[in-house]
Length: 101
Image (cartoon, rainbow, N blue to C red; front, side, top):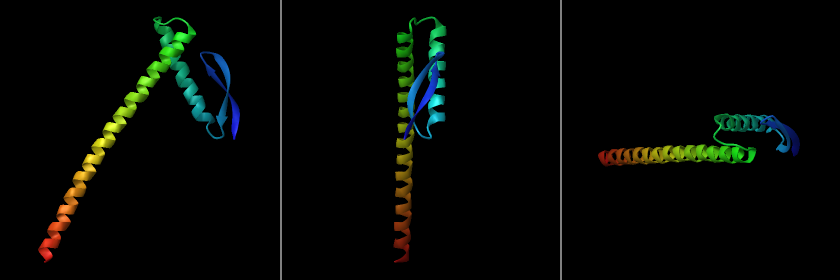
C-alpha cells in the first residue's frame, strides 16, 4: 500500500507516492539529492534547475556505477578465494583417503 509523502528538494516541496514503511529511506534520499544539487548550484559552474538536476543525476549515476563495479570486483575476488579454498579442502580430503587405504 502506498501513501503520499511530502519531500523537500532545493527548498521546494513535492508530493510523492511512497510504499508503506519506506518513508524514512525516501526522506534520506530526498535530503541527499537536495544536498548534492545545492553543491552543484553553489559551485557556480551550472546555471538553471534543469541543468543542476541533470548534472546531479549524472554524478549520482556515476557514483552508483562505480560502487557497483567495486562490489563486483570484491565478489569476483571472494569467489576466487572460495574456489581456491575448496580446491585445497578437496585435495586434503583426497590425500586423507589415500593414506587410509
